[in-house]
Length: 156
Length: 289
Ligand SMILES: Cc1cc2nc3c(=O)[nH]c(=O)nc-3n(C[C@H](O)[C@H](O)[C@H](O)COP(=O)(O)OP(=O)(O)OC[C@H]3O[C@@H](n4cnc5c(N)ncnc54)[C@H](O)[C@@H]3O)c2cc1C
Ligand code: FES
Ligand code: FES
Image (cartoon, rainbow over all chains, first blue to last red; front, top):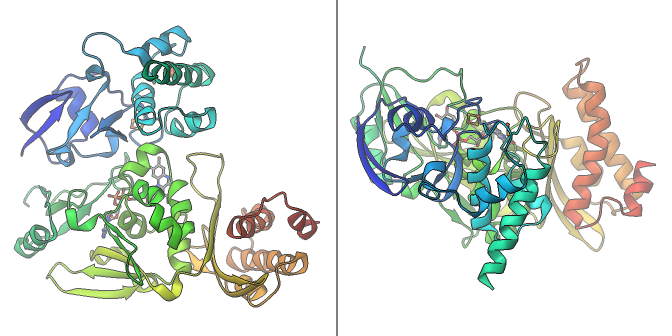
């Protein structure tokens, strides 16, 4: 079947299988391998993308369900560079193997969009759907808090 | 056999026309958070209809006497709706405790009901509130049924979830116990809806999930509270009744011992939340002690 959607700001019209998952479509058809597949059960959050700005697990959506919607993957967050939140992840040592990082960053972007100055408990709650096997989460929480504070400061 | 076809109607009129035109089997997907879990079989033939884009199926209407919720309303929308929180805080609380942000942004109330998991978190609240469903058959027939009469494998579409005014009692609460704090499937969940005036309970409805194949009312626990003064003696009777309900529901199960202990603490948390009290209030210490 044919479908059209926007991915990372670009309008796309393409042929898809009715039962292909959004995560598989983004990785295998569009080559956006920043989208990771860990469990395909909604447990790990490695496949997190923004759907019209909201974090969702792309493994639990069929690609055709994204018809007419706007998807942001890690590749689309900041063109070819890294944004302030990604910088904060690097600075705080919140990236080790990096497998969870794209999903973690996108879930955190979703949080900061909804709640620009979250407390620690709110950050942990918002990232509860993202599993990191390496860092122990502490540095990730610090990275999100640092980026949030910097963005708030920049606005003042 | 014909391969699976898909359709994503944008409103109820298109959805009805799509159903009427389909001679073969029809399947529905909404958030996909149950249906698309890896390893679960996906339909191979017929028509798969995406409910997530049907405009008339995602709404929360709190202005009338009854509360009406579209079948494809997301759990995130339920958790965030301030007016719904005024009418039935327990439903917002249950929604807020479902899965992760990613899950709540996609999961729907209709999917939570139709998937019929024993631990589904919205179910105890809906059961306690005496919920009715507006349903649509493949042939276009519409009807209403009580939630407890709904057959999940009937293939009938849940278009609306109706919380009747008489079920919307002024105090309500939802608590769950899982293996961790966030993002956890309930090992046990409880909902309470109650009248409460001059420090006395009036009508009380209590329901539990993960104690049997479906969420159900706990009548003995209701009797322990109804008409009685809020105090340690009443709460002790309530806890005894909850333990009795666990013993009757799962006699001899491995989880019986754990759940009869857990239900006592969970029951007190439930009352504390409904009354707006701290679970550390002396009243609860006296009741537990
Ligand atoms: C990681 C993870 C964590 C979870 N945590 C929780 C939790 O804490 N609490 C909880 O209660 N649940 C939880 N769930 C389960 C799930 O998210 C919910 O049951 C959700 O409400 C299902 O809704 P959906 O729209 O995604 O259903 P779908 O997966 O789209 O559909 C499920 C079934 O319902 C049918 N269906 C969907 N909508 C309708 C309708 N309107 N009418 C008739 N049939 C319909 C579909 O055909 C399908 O058979 C979790 C799931 C995952 C993957
Ligand atoms: S791959 Fe999607 S949640 Fe794990
Ligand atoms: S950095 Fe390795 S899983 Fe998170």
